[in-house]
Amino acid sequence: MLKPVIEPSVNAEDFAGQASWAAPSNIAIVKYWGKHGVQLPRNPSVSMTLSKALTGTRLHWRPGTGRLVAFSASGEADAQFADRVAAYLSKMALEHPALARLDFGVETENAFPHSSGIASSASGFAALALGLASAVVAESQGAEASLPEDGPAFRSFAGRLARLGSGSASRSLCGPWMAWGQTEAFADNAEKPTDDHAVPLDHVHADFRTWRDAIAIVDAGKKAVSSSAGHRLMEGNPFAETRFANARQRTLALDRALREGDTDTFVQIAEAEALELHALMMSSKPSYILMRPGTLAVIQAVQEFRADTDLPLCFTLDAGPNVHLLYPASAAAQVEEFIHDAVRRYCDDGRVLMDAAGEGPTRLGPAKA
Ligand code: PMV
Figure 1 (cartoon, protein in one colour):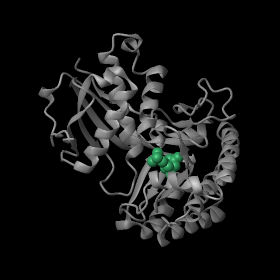
Figure 2 (cartoon, rainbow, N blue to C red; figure 1 turned 180 degrees about the vertical axis):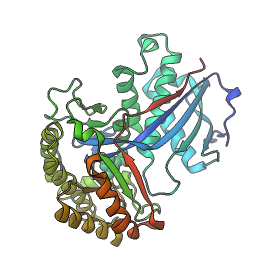
Figure 3 (cartoon, rainbow, N blue to C red; figure 1 turned 90 degrees about the horizontal axis):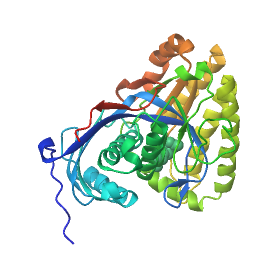
C-alpha cells in the first residue's frame, strides 16, 4: 500500500476550518505506570497541571477521510513525529464519525526548550485532542454541535481523545490538580475520576493551588527506554500487584493531604512514588535505569535541605533522569536560592526550568468554520 504523502508545511488556505489550543504538561504525584486494554490505567493517578511547559497546536481541517495531509513541528518537517500524529489521527477517525469525514493539517510548537528532556507527549496530545474536539463541535450537527468549549462535557470528550494518544495527556485538560482512573478517593468531587478520562479536583487546599515545580535538567538527551515500553514491561514485573495496591492506597492518602493542606504526607507520598517508579524499572525484565548520578545528587541535596530548614521541599521524577523540585510559593525565596547554590551545578548547562501550578489549556483563536 502506498503511504499517503504528508506535506512538510501547512498552508491555511488549503483548509476549511481551524482551531488553536495551548495545553500544558503535568507532573504526577501518584504515578500512572502500567496499562491494559485501550490505554486504560492499571491504577489511579493524581497530578499537578503546569503553566509554562506548553505545547501550542493549530489543527486545520477540510472534508476528507481521517488522514494527516500536512504537518510541521516548530516550523519544520519532522517525518517521525508526523507518522506518530498520522497514526493517532487515523485511530481518532475510528472514535468519531465527524473526524472520519475530515483530513487534517497540524502545526505544533513547544514553549519549553527543545531537547530539554521534558516529555512533551502530555501537552502535545492534550493540545491536539482539544483541536479535534473543536473540529467535532464545528462539523457535527448533533448534540456535540452545541457543546461549550469551556464546559465539562467538552473537556471530558477532549480528555478521552487525549488519553488515547498518551494516558497522562488526559490529566492536562484542566488544573491545577487532576485525577485519572477509578478510585474510592475523591468521593465528593463534582465529577468522579474514571478510567475513561481525568477530572479536575474540587477540594484542594488553597496552599496546594500555588505550588511550584522547578525542573532540574540533569540530562537533556533522549531517554533510552520509552514510556510505552516501560508500561509494557509492567506486565511481567514481579511487584506489579503490590505496586497497583500501593498507588490505590496513596491516592486515598493524597486526597486527604490535598484537602487538609498536609504537606508532610504530601512530601512522603511524592518521594515514595518517584522512587517506586524507578524501582519498578530496575526490577523489570530486562531491567533498566533512567536515573543518572546527578539525579541522585539532586535528590540527596533536596533531602538535606529539608532536614536543615524544615521547609516542605520535595522531589519527584518522571520516567527520566530529571528531577522535579516541588515546593509551596511561601518557601520560594529560600528554595530558589538553594536551587541556585546547590542544584544548578548538577544540571545540563546549569538548566532549571521554573514552573508552577496552572489552570489548564487556553484556546488561542476563534475557529474558522
Ligand atoms: O502518558 P505516558 O504513556 O507517557 O506515561 C506517563 C508515565 C509517567 O510520566 C512516568 C507517570 C505519569 O503518571 O505521568
